[in-house]
Length: 213
Image (cartoon, rainbow, N blue to C red; front, side, top):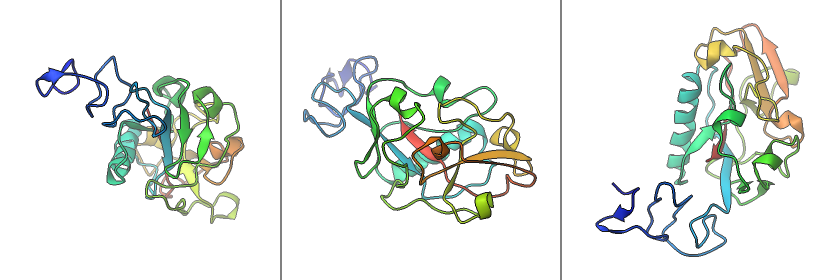
């Protein structure tokens, strides 16, 4: 078991490339500072990105949304656990995310927030407009403001709390009649809560925001 005090039959240590549960926040296999994981195996920052892929509102629930963005992180070679910035009637980023003083950076190292509190204060330092591969955000087919914008499924206010109940039947159906989106080019509260729609909206496609924990 490479997460306890014995790794490959040797005592676990910072820099061995394995995250020791309850001791390490990260372990990138070196003892260098400034690369996201400090010389004491503490997170210096967490990665964030918008997915390069588009999805309908049937995300398979929050669990399905998390699986989708974890797959994108792994495809890009990004380590760690990522969760989707999305809410259902019970779960929100405020209740699900790891909170702390570690800041958030895009995959191109642009800083978007200096801590979880900064992330949820209503203003980002930069938009979350870079996907896991380093490209720009995709444009789905929502008709918000006439369409043609990089919308992101959220169901979430910029504070990390729920925006509207029962969106896309808890993100499990394209037949849902309520959904909300953020816009990946914004840094004010619209980054998370830009547009809401009713009717046949869950069949539309948008990206997801992803945050390392």
